[in-house]
Length: 117
Image 1 (cartoon, rainbow, N blue to C red):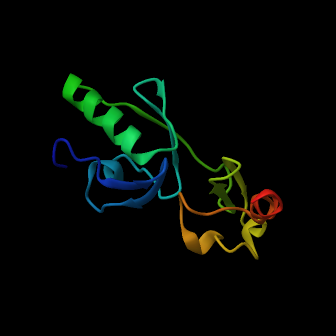
Image 2 (image 1 turned 60 degrees about the vertical axis):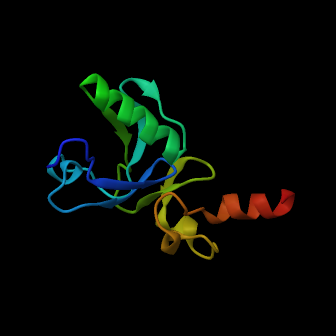
């Protein structure tokens, strides 16, 4: 893997693509994982902030990412409630599982948002 390249794309704080043969792939990082910490610091749900933190860490010589992932294959991350919920919870949502990691919102959050949006 090229130094300085993570080998993955993120949306907010979610891995949305893992490049074949890249550093993330070699470390078995999976699409749908959520970045929670960069070198021990809480990672915001903000791609630019995470990339800035990662760049500073790589410049300093070491980058450690802490991920959270679903414990069951049928669970996916909702960006609104920031939880892993069953796939069925996304059915009928306009930004459901088809939206992809970092964009998908469960139906419960979508309905709650509609009440107050």
